[in-house]
Length: 377
Image 1 (cartoon, helix red, strand yellow):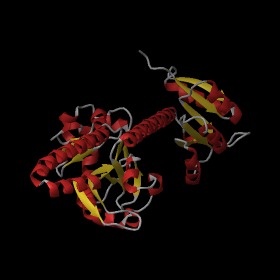
Image 2: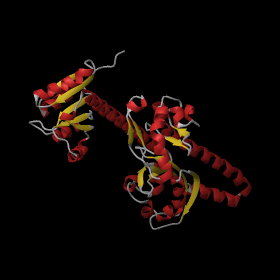
Image 3: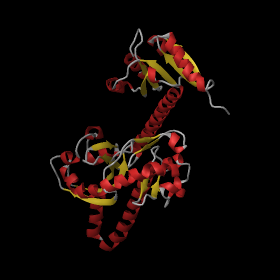
Image 4: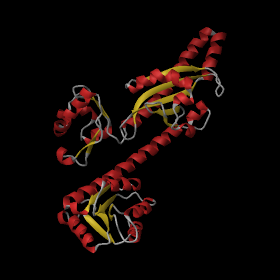
């Protein structure tokens, strides 16, 4: 079955420029695009409401509205991919367009049929990935909201990035008030107890069921918490975060201690059963969270010092067109020979310097794979 033609809207007040763009689009692939034209911003916005569009080619300067005004009005109703066309492109213009979520911009004089086609494909792919990421984040938010244990996401400086409603029962205040706060300022006692375990997590080593006894303060009664931590990358895959699960086990511990005073032998049996149930519950929650990471839309892999795959998630394995198991223990050269020739030297540089290399994009013409490969080491 032939893929459906892409619906492209050309917005330009110059009939000559609209004709040029139409010819560039149809020259190499006459059946690839369905083209609609508009010569002003109002007509462009009306066209967006009439039918779904795959991409808009928008002239930066049109009579009734400039490109920013059209984008601002468009973003109120749609996330359709937009490539901005201009007579003279500058870095300042690119920065100027950032708040309006244009996927790309290009100087008209630099356009070729091939380049225009690639820019449209890149813009469409970029928006598709953003939509998938937003859907995954929405799913994560829903899952976090239903978890029976408190969840807290910290950055490397122990600033709270995300939390869930169950944390309210532990902390005693709305979790929205916590976001952006540094844990040492909000709760110094807890931060002091977690400093060493969190440093361990930032080195990639999780910890489980650390019981922390916190003394009474002006804001909190004395309590006992059970805290587990695991490393996690942010949605962009760029920085290591600390995922903590927190349970207030004060009452459970008090009951356990009271039973111990009254009936030590019986209490030993009950305690073992309680702990097994607690461990099973926490392992279930940890498994759910690990499943979220495994099925994240961002490709993640862990390589050893000889550049052999030690771990890979489903998203990256699918990009490489192999099963996760087919990667394990193999070098990059064995899995993707074309990729190895490009990035092995980069990985060796990261190993030698200890410094990351971010956002290195490798185009499909090097890899013979669809789309583009963006590398963060």
